[in-house]
Length: 303
Image 1 (spheres, rainbow, N blue to C red):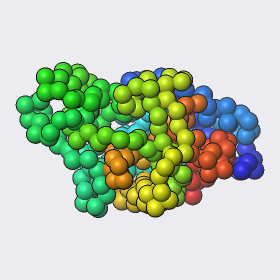
Image 2 (cartoon, rainbow, N blue to C red):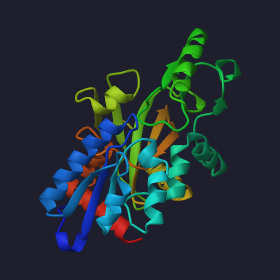
Image 3 (cartoon, one colour):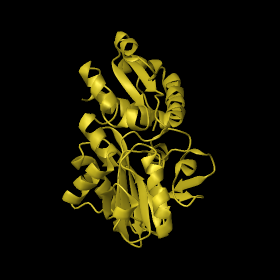
Image 4 (cartoon, rainbow, N blue to C red):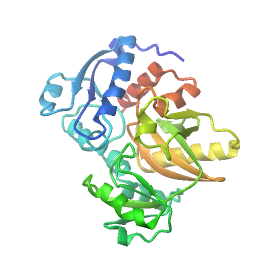
């Protein structure tokens, strides 16, 4: 499916990227892919780096839309969305509340639990001595992304180091029961799920290297899963999207243990790099990259 939108129909777009988060390098890679699509589509755009006092320059551009290509707290926790709302500038992706809820793993898990959406058993801790869950567990930052400072702990003596790794990031700590099995993900655009993708990682789990280094992971249609399970996962992803009030394109990550799946988290600004999952899922649905970009833009322009 090819996009037939013209640059005039899109208006003037700011492509916002960079920032100072640990994921700024990934943000630049996503922006490079989006920028290539903009050029091919003939879109009137300007690239702005979210470094220093960039907002006055952005506002002076008087854009019709801001395409947010920023991963990590700065782009995904609602603060950037809030600034753009103050200036009444439309932007891609979820709003302030949904961005904040999905970035905070404790808030999102509480919403999943309330709505009977299966997620691994979890607890918030301040030290390794507070961990009550049976090993193995996953120790990770509450608000971090790209699995930075995330550790699978199988031995009690390794808990302290895993907790310290999170403490060193300055974030709160969440511990969840490790779910063995398969890693899967479902993209959702405007509330409608894309085909399920399976992630095959060369590392212990789908960590930073597997996500962003070429050749460290593979993705594709999951083999050996019934249509019932696949459809159920897609429905669960759509429900998670709905109850957290998401907009635009998101990615919902799952673990599958035998025939029981668990939602891990929602990524409100999925990666757009050459190794990213959302573009691959869109491709399976017959949506090429340029059309995916136009779909994201059109979704934002409907608001």
